[in-house]
Amino acid sequence: MEANYISNENFDRVNYTDTVLAKGEYEDCTFTHCVFAQVDLQRVTFVECIFENCDISMANINGTAFREVRFENCKLLGLRFEHCNEFLFSVGFNSCQLNLSSFYNLSLKSTRFENCNLSEVDFAGTDLTGAIFNHCDLQNALFDNTILEKADLRTSFGFTIDPEGNRVKKAKFSLDALPGLLTKYDIIIG
Image (tube, rainbow, N blue to C red):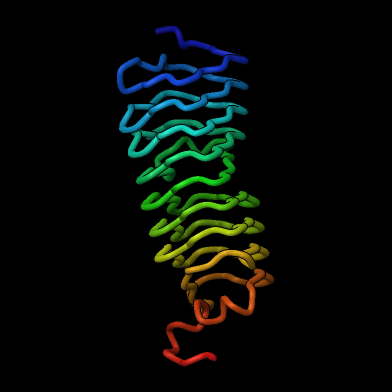
């Protein structure tokens, strides 16, 4: 079967639960107000694409390639990013809902999360070196054996991170984050 190559296209208000997304490579494409909820995105490659106001919740992204992809105002609930194609994996998120998603054991060096809801996201084993979490809700996010060196969490909130169970050298936190860093000691701050 010959793979499709689609470049510089704009897709607006397409419901892919009704319309089949052609398998292949999409380069420099924009998807706006599209619905991919529970859609099978296996064997699809997105290169330098932008997703704006899309619902990609619970999609099957096993083997899906995201290379320099931006998500803006998207709903990405329950996605298992660790099942994606890891070759040149690079994503950025702005004002997205990523609740219950997983980045288990992935390399997300220098990834930007801006104004995102990351409640109950799994970051166990993830390399977040130099990542930026700007105004993100990290309520009940899992950080276990996570590399957070030089990560910036100064404006984020709701997280609990054990400095002994994660690498936090030179990570940036606000003074308000102290309770989330000292939770395991069951001390009262204030």
